[in-house]
Length: 158
Image (cartoon, rainbow, N blue to C red; front, side, top):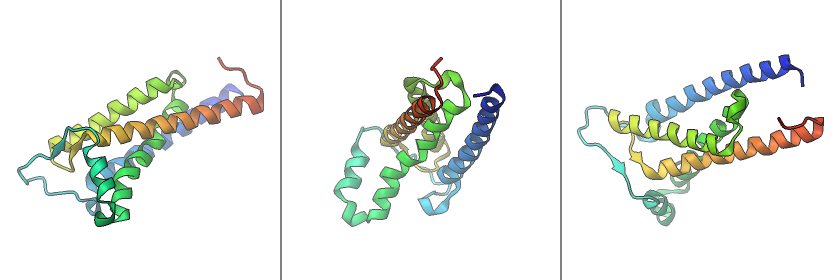
């Protein structure tokens, strides 16, 4: 693949990543239909027990409704799939599964910490787990697609 084409792909990747980040920030911090609360409420909400909320949503899925359980569990995974897929497109040095996974975890930790500090949503260790899983799946999908692309076009890995 020509150098110019690769550079264009990276620019498009950066634009897509910016659009993704803006959409993610909107849904995480400003979308009222996802249970966002008034900043002036005095309590901080957090869960530091791994799998507590995941287990709760699974056990009470019939009571809370399929949509609520799906949005909480799968939504956290799906929300970070683009992160894991686009980051390696943007940066050649980020084509490592573990680097992208760590970066996804760190980004999720920043998001959760901002939610705690601003009292928007809840700091939830389960969200860290699910978000990181989403970044990992996205990166895995990228690596599979990239391997297929290299095989199809006869490019060698560098």
